[in-house]
Length: 261
Ligand SMILES: NC(=O)C1=CN([C@@H]2O[C@H](COP(=O)(O)OP(=O)(O)OC[C@H]3O[C@@H](n4cnc5c(N)ncnc54)[C@H](O)[C@@H]3O)[C@@H](O)[C@H]2O)C=CC1
Ligand SMILES: CCCCCC(=O)/C=C/C=C\C/C=C\C/C=C\CCCC(=O)O
Image (cartoon, rainbow, N blue to C red; front, side, top):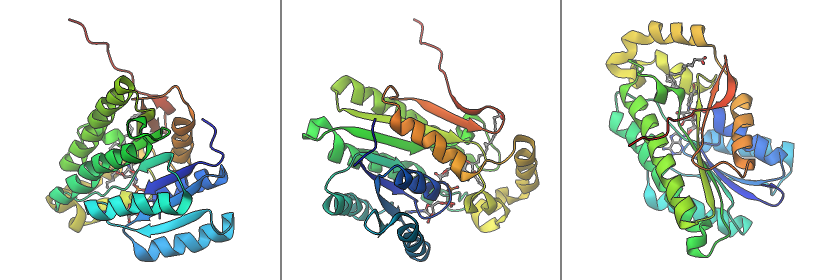
């Protein structure tokens, strides 16, 4: 997939992994809508990106992705401003075991809504030209991390939803590839929330155990995740693919046993 002239929407794009992805897209001459809850960080991000990549190439849209109407407006604003939509990265996520219902809303329900909105704007079913969606899960989806049971459940859900809707896209010829990316630990503000009782609730008592896992498996940097993301966006053979990124194996794909009768 050539990226020249394409338009992307990245949720949670103002910092961390999303910010690194936004920068990689801008480096490839993609126009980008940064959709994020955090007004202050989002505005700072926009100023820095305008300085680095030139004005008119990105926009910041303040949006709580759990509010369905606001998320819908963010998609429409992107299309109104840049004329089309080709790439959607459903990246925004939180780690809050105390308010675990919010964690389900942000990490799973909003990823589903973001995927359906992406299809509204890109699917051949709606007379559009096709595109690509990448949903962000986690290596937590392959483990049963005792520190974050609901976070883990949401990340399992993102993989299941993405693989199923990718099959639907293929069978119904939506022309949209839908893939999922699962990073191991990444050095972002989210990772450091493991220290906070406000985030972890009663599971904060496992924080030393969590930090032990980080030391054992290592911590990636956001540009390493952006590299995997760009591969998934550009490789037109990938649909329903589950990419993992770890310190020990780098970028690689999860394989599933074929079903037998
Ligand atoms: N940092 C890590 O170790 C790992 C992170 N991930 C996943 O990667 C994704 C990005 O995480 P990080 O960059 O680490 O987090 P981060 O906390 O650094 O950045 C997340 C961004 O999402 C935004 N956001 C949060 N709630 C939102 C909402 N309701 N509406 C709109 N924006 C919202 C935040 O304002 C922030 O800018 C998440 O889905 C996370 O679960 C996956 C594996 C490991
Ligand atoms: C404080 C919450 C931060 C949440 C970020 C996140 O998604 C955490 C994931 C937790 C557990 C899984 C992560 C790492 C396991 C790492 C590697 C396992 C694979 C082994 C290897 O091949 O190296």
